Length: 351
Image (cartoon, rainbow, N blue to C red):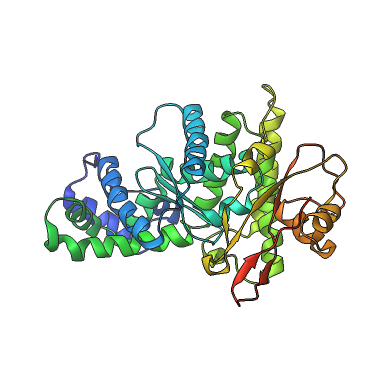
């Protein structure tokens, strides 16, 4: 039940509708929700079923357990929370992560393939946790549906079967629009800051999130198109990089012990990860480097084509001039070649 602070129900609903029509300041509209945390959890629970049905869960129990362990480490640093969180990998090649109301968090296999350290994973999951703790989904639903959410939301999550199907469809449509495209520029920047703080509190180096955002910026430039349609709702990546750099510097400047990156530990979990479209039958391979290896020598000796040096460097978020140390894990994407039977086969040169 939402407290109205003495305002009558009719006046309260008029205030909501008025704010949605622009009679109240955008800041108040942005920060306001009439959905209780209990209803938020129920909405998330039902939407979770749709997410898994629509996209499918990525079937790798060890990788799933690893992602969950990093998420739990972040939650341990936060302390008691209002929601029961879950972290799930979905079988999607796009680079994305999403949060539903009530603590349901998803990361795509495409995002896992792009990340290069456990600290980066922590930053991404921390960002999504920030959406949940700030209740961005509930606020957006309130903004999108207004006073209707008082009846639609409750009807959609309550028992009743078919009579609630239409109501849930309206809630679901509004919710998924924001889940897939983002919760708005202000909300995304807020989640960035919260993600950095959460990762730092859990002992991770927040500078790794800056590294990831720079990789996103490079990806946008290479593809010469909007980053998965996010530009309408996400801030420009360069703005996110600048703000993240400032916040990371502030956090690191506070001291408080060594901060973890855990790049090798992270990459070790990615061996065999499906990469790109399933029909291409490509999987990441993890190579254990020898002292003095470079992207060029790895491309030549392991992939059989030195011209793939740039791809090796880009995939691992490093420069081509980088020299590896003994035991470093290196992500590789073996080239696909056509077999004599016309089918596609992976070809990985021996060490």
